[in-house]
Image (cartoon, rainbow, N blue to C red):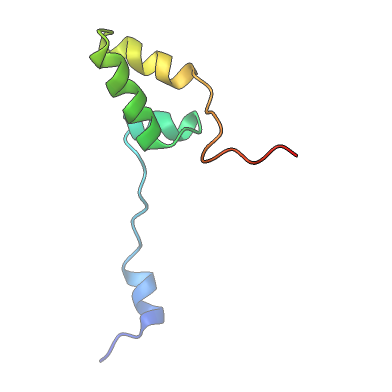
Length: 74
């Protein structure tokens, strides 16, 4: 007997991607910061000599600036 796609949805539940608690991805989602931006900020702070945990706190507390090329002021 063939299982239709409708029946298969009932048999195989879809797995949702939930970030691991405490990971950078979870912290980025909570603070509404893109993950790439957060990682770049952390990397720059670590390179300047700040320890990783402190760098994560600083990176999460900084506001997100405007993206892209500024518009002309008329």
